[in-house]
Image 1 (cartoon, helix red, strand yellow):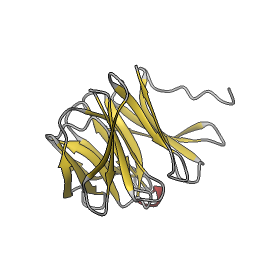
Image 2: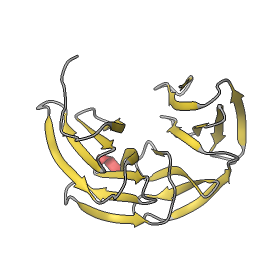
Image 3: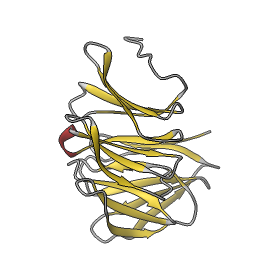
Image 4: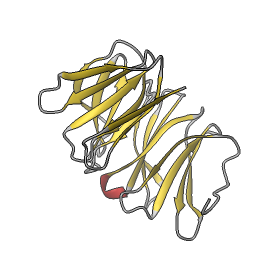
Length: 193
């Protein structure tokens, strides 16, 4: 254990590092999002705006924005430099999200569809396809070419972005908790509870 970061008043539900590794963001059951400085091991900013626990967090646009999705059916795009809300999506159930490598878009499930969201406007720009069950986790490949989803029925699905068709569906778990993609985009890891 290199460092301990304490500030949330309840368990942490999601965490992600910035591209350069100097910061990370955490979302919690205490309804807050915290931006941390890794080197000095302290809080840069705490963001409040959700009314229920945070399901997912991620960095957007050149690590200058944070996106958070809460169990309150709200997704918020935060400006890190101004510490305020850039955009907000209401009445949406986002269980998971992943941000594109260039930080321009996010992918999430919304009302039974896997959708792309423009992070500058907070608007859904396209629907990748229908999902048959709740998506618990998403990962965007570092090369930007595909997205991996893990759902509550144990399916790991690879989504090609050039044709938006399910390329491969892997059934290997009873329920998928997390998915990850190797930095060279050649391997996928998935875990279940």
